[in-house]
Length: 385
Image (cartoon, rainbow, N blue to C red; front, side, top):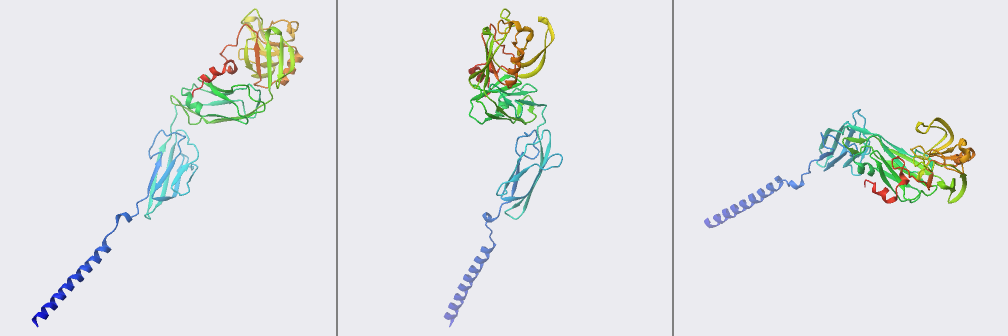
């Protein structure tokens, strides 16, 4: 009897220990939490950063969220107007789509729903660059112009450009026909593009100068983008060999007209009609000529085509009728009979080339329209890139 009771108690004791152990194990399992299973909090970041200063007006504003998706994004200018922009497909990145203004404070507010079910927020502002100087640029030819086959594209700046490479990188030329050409800086305020050879006739050209926001150096920035579209017309070239006293006009490679002329005085190099390829720069039905050094002022002539910034024109001069076609007696201009001057005037386009040879003097390289006076190697050496 004693032995059986002892065994019975032992069995009960052993069973109790096992039951307690099993119960204790189940309680520990329900209390533990796996850190890897806790959703991370959403985090919003901004570019430019909160409080950033001297931000480029070309820098896109970007707001990004990690571990969540945006529910609200607002970027506003100093007037409280929204900056254009939008979210990407997964609603994790907002990017602006318009340039910013100079010297302005922009404010952003963003909210995102995190994977943890909580809302993340970011508010802040940044300031854009406030330039010491804003530089205006102009483009030539003007919109919708029809020009001759030697017409250069010219970008002129209101102030000197220190970082020419930065400005040149912002320029682009598109043509309807493949054309080899390049940019050349003719001064610190002017960069021109011309084709290696004359433009193909009937070429459509588009020029874009995305200069807004471009730093030219020394605190100067581009004031605005500019652009133009124009068309190259028919191929017309004037050739003058000064000793021949004849001005020949070639249309699409064939001679279409020839006019007797009188060129600059052979005996005086200062009055020669200089050698070189120039272009028709302006067409003036009448023009007034003055040169006190050579004894004339307020002289009116008709059907005038300017071919340089040094005073040379193609125009009528009936007062020199006796020498037209016979002697070179002008002060540097190409003199024609009035009927011939009118006929040529009517046929000419701005940008038509005029090729002059046979003179004792050359056109000086001081004009802002020297494009065809430079050979191609020299031209390309003037590129900033």
